[in-house]
Image (cartoon, rainbow, N blue to C red; front, side, top):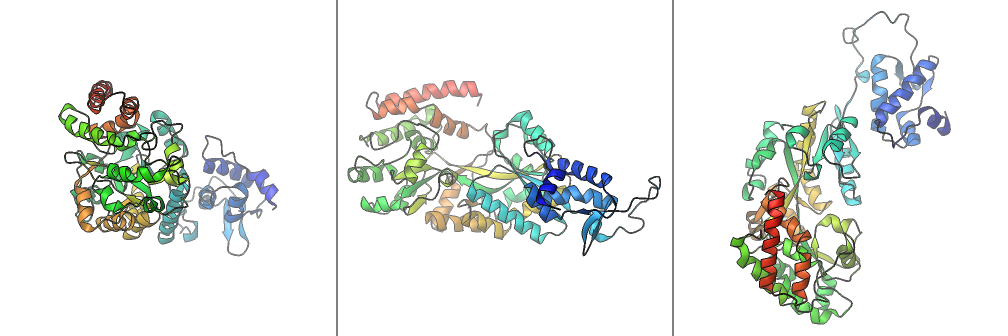
Length: 481
């Protein structure tokens, strides 16, 4: 059968809201019912290639017809339409007469993943392939989520695509109990297990461990152009960044950078990642940070004060036009690998503040067809092999403590002593309602005008701090923190 004929007979519409498997099942049913016994059905590999879908999807569509006996699979000649039954009135329980093992349907679970950057896809494709290779009685099929959906739209997508396992996000704006089923006890207990990092972190509410298993932690970091740092004569950059001395490094670098280079990315990112909740009791901390920022003076080449588009500072950094970039790995991965030597560090925290860590977690969808297999996949994410891949492939921090330390040493040159300090200073975000997460959002989006006025000497640091406090009170009241 030619490729054109296969497309004509079994072609599906990827843009349809009807799941791909359901579309193919309908086409197969019509073909089987209208074809003579012995008519050959294209192989899974050929059909997947011609239709532009995964082989797992093809297999899932074919399996019900194999189980029902309407098609048969021969070792040499492939799959074909089965001989018609003499009577459809005879209801035979195939289990009672011994259903051949090769007709037993393989359990396939659908995994919803929103991590679609090239590096992230490489990681997930490798993980899913490895899991499928090790588990002959269960397969994972990845469904890629390429746009933001919230509330009922998200629930509808999950139902229509028959999702069993999913990456969790606060962006869904859905309570976990409406989205997921409770994890098995052993996975819920990871928060108390000394092999994981959670016991050392500050976690305000551990109840979400009932539903979500965090397998990775994302930190905002300070990335830097090491080639540029060396040209500026900067010494001990990693250690000084960990000790929160980025401003000191900027002051040393600015005279050497020239007018075509920036010292650092958006000014509000620098403030947000200090971890200060701008309440009255923290005014001394906030004013101290603002005073330190004002020491830079050369605002034209110091911080970016405007934002043209969401990744304009990352683009400047990747293009070699910036010394320091405050952000997360995916922001750089979206733009490509810089041509210079890239280094990174987790910035230290002031006394009285915390480093914000955001967990990437996975949960079992409430409609999951086989929660035992779903739990096995989650346990696979906690395995040593995958936890090391998170550090090596994704350039992120795993939750298994030994591999967290490995990642800290590999990526940020942190010793065990400094890694322990980092863990004890980490506040783990778990939902979008925490004051700490709201404060970071507020600092990034609601302080820009005030910070620009301060850097241009239109207001003092004390006036800027007072303005931020007033704005925060209004923001907090509206957001009901």
